[in-house]
Amino acid sequence: MIIAPSILAADFANLERDIDMINSSDADWFHIDVMDGVFVPNISFGMPVLKAIKKLAKKPLDVHLMIVDPDRYIETFAKLGAEILTVHFEACNHLHRSIQKIKSCGIKAGIALNPHTPVDNISEVIQDIDLVCLMSVNPGFGGQSFIENTFQKVEKLRSIIKEKNTSCFIEIDGGVSNLNSSKLAKCGADVLVAGSYVFNAENPESNIKLLKDI
Ligand code: DX5
Ligand code: ZN
Image 1 (tube, rainbow, N blue to C red):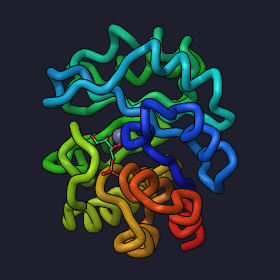
Image 2 (cartoon, rainbow, N blue to C red):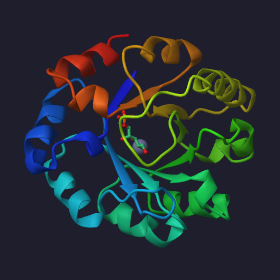
Image 3 (tube, rainbow, N blue to C red):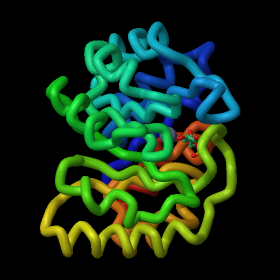
C-alpha cells in the first residue's frame, strides 16, 4: 500500500517540521491539495507553498488540483515539481486533451472522481492514465466522514482496469483511517491519502505505519 499524507492537515506554522516527519516516516508520497474556491467551496494554497514544499520534500509530490479548467495551470505545476498531477473529471470539458497535456510534460496523469460520479465515466481513457483518485468525501475540506459507497466503487474500478487489461493506481482520498484501510485494500485500493488521521494524531508516524502495514 502506498501512503500519501495530505499536507492540508499539516501545521502551516511548522511546515518544515511536518515535512521532515513525512520524509523520515514510512509514507511514500506527499499529497498536495490545491483548491480555488470555485470548483470547491474552499481555498487552500497555491504555487508559492508548493515551491516551498518541493524544496524540503524527499518523496514524490502527488498534486490534486481542485480547480476549474485545470489545463491553464498544468505546465506550471509540472515545472514546480509535481510527479503526479491529478485533475477532476468534473472540471474538464476535454478530459482526453487534459490527460495528454499532463503527459506531454513528462509526468504521471491522474483523474479524480467526485463521490457522485460513476467510475464507468472514465472507461474510455483508463488506458491513458496512471492514477484514478476516488473521492471518498466531497472535495473541499479535511476531516469529513468517509462515504461507505466508496468500497463498491473501488471494486467496480478494479474490474474495469482488469477488463481493459491496463494498469493504473486506485487512490482513495477523504476520511481514510485504520477503520476503513484494510477493507479498502481488500477491495483493490493501491494508494491511501490521509490528512486528519495522520496530522491530528499524537504520534503521526505510528498512524502512517498502521496504514502502511495492512
Ligand atoms: C479533500 C482533500 C483531501 C483531504 C483529506 O478535499 O482532497 O486530500 O485533505 O483529508 P482527511 O484525510 O482529513 O479526510
Ligand atoms: Zn486530495
